[in-house]
Image (cartoon, rainbow, N blue to C red):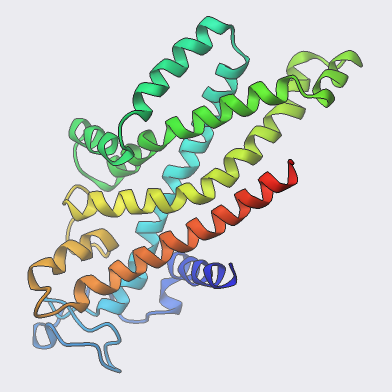
Length: 262
């Protein structure tokens, strides 16, 4: 877990303060330095326009990770509200909401995101919306299950017996427990959202050139992979390390949370 946290820490610094890790301008072109292999001067080599790949990978962290964090945060909030309301609503309302949710969960998240993009059109903002809508059903289901479990917990029933208003007891004793469970899931979901956003960008549905973004960089180097492998490999490694590290941390936190409730 220590290695995963270290990787995420470096990624966080790159996302918040890229200039600290890479001083070169990620948009600066130099055709005389095009397709240079990795070297002490250009750690990750250069691309077709002579731009420094290392600098572009570092500066691309903010966009790639930012979309994943934004999508996961919104999905968590929407899932908490809808799932908690469904879990505490009358049976008919709960059934209707969950049937719609089940239909959405029947499709792969990436396919749902593609459909949303097809309706809204390409662009970084629409990618964030698409990834959010694709991830929401999982959070709704978990929030609903947690709500139904906590509503009948002993400490909640005790609060009601003591005269605590139903809404106040729900907000104080049920919502925090649901939010805690969703937060653990969100740690894993961040990796999935980053991967989905990068995949959409790879297909040309996200930011446009010359924006430094990991998925777009992968797509930019695919036609010269045999000649200049570093253009696609290094952003691909950045995506892989980020997703794997976030997933490892998330799974460990979930295991600890499950262990604390048994």
